[in-house]
Amino acid sequence: MTQAILDAVQQAMSSPWIYLALFALALLDGFFPVVPAETSVITAGVFAASTGAPDVAAVIAVAALGAFAGDHISYAIGRSANGRLRRGGRGGGRAFAWARRALAERGGLVLVAARYIPGGRTACTLTMGAVAYPRRSFALFDAVAAVTWSVYSVLIGYVGGAAFEHDPLKGLLLGLGIALSVTAVAETVRHVRRRAAGAPKREPVLAVSDD
Image (cartoon, rainbow, N blue to C red; front, side, top):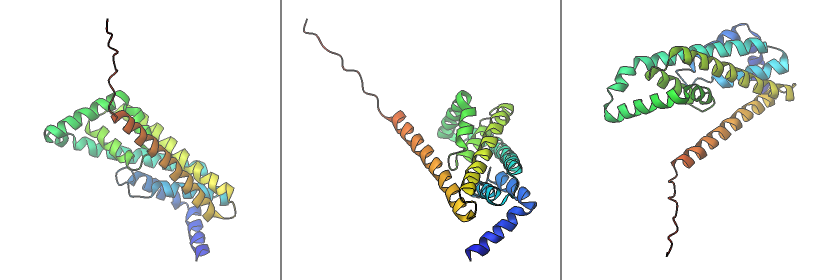
C-alpha cells in the first residue's frame, strides 16, 4: 500500500504538470492558508533529491512566483477592506492606527518573518493592504520573503531526500520534521519575547539617607 502511494506520488512529481500545481498551491496559500503549499514544496524537494525529478531550480522558481502572486491577491483583499476597518468603531480605529504605525516602522521585516509563522503570512499581507502600506515597498519585501521561503522549503526537502535516497518516505518525514522544528522554535522565541515585552517593569528603589 505504501509503495503504491509512493509510486503514485513519484509519477505526479515526474509530470510537467507538477510545476503548475505547485504554483497554484503556493498562490492559493496566500489567501486560503489551509492549502498545503509548504508540504507540497518540501515533497517536491525530497523527490528531486531521491529520483531527480522534478527539477530543483524550477520548483524554487514556480513556488516563489506562486507565493508572490498569492500575497498580492491577499494584499488587494486587505486594501478593499480598508474603509470597513476605518469605520470599525473606536476599537477598530485604534487597531488600525497601531497596525499602521508598526508596519511603518518595521513593515518589511514583519512581512519576511511572518512567512515562517503559521497563519502569519496571510494575516500580515491582509493587514498591509488594509493600512495601505506602499505597494512598491510591499512588492520588494514580498519578493525577498517569497524567494527565501521557496529556497528554504525546497532545501529542507532536498536534504531529507538526499539523506534517504532510496526511501523517499523517510526523507519526507525528515524534511517535515525539520520544518516543524524550525516553526516550533520560531513560535517559542516569539512567545517568550512577547511575554518579556508585556512584563511589568519594576520601579527602581531609591535609598533614603538619614542625613
